[in-house]
Image (cartoon, rainbow, N blue to C red; front, top):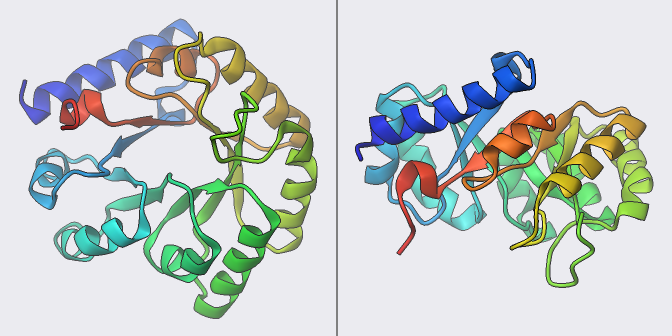
Length: 219
């Protein structure tokens, strides 16, 4: 399949799911997860008009995106991987959104970086929705306190993010994240990937993070 075929197929899946859920398609942002992909692999999607991309690591994004943004200044970069506090300033300088805010020390580091730079990327609080010790994200019970701290620090809180447990039906976890978001008064839901994008959209995802369906399986 060509990049155009893959992009069209993913957009069709999102469109069908939004129709089933009676949702406005404009309320769903497709983030093309370009981690490990070269600039040459990313450029065809940019040429096709796609603008939202996701990277896991600040250092990798710094290597690829300055040159890509010179050619496509309206491209939007989402950092979706775990973020070290000592990389907060680099993340703020580079990203339009950070999807992995998961602890008080990172909130503080991001706030300092935003105050110093004047840039204020959107922030999603990552929730460890399956209570998995190997995964990032704050515990469900800690979400209210972390959101309060982020708001007090004037972070632009856009919503919540999660990665459901691998190999399990994702719907209950997506539904739980949506419930927490409603209770906490946040609108954004960053959830859903290549295998479960339809489920995520029907349960309210506002941002879906799709990699392999757009770029092919990673080697």
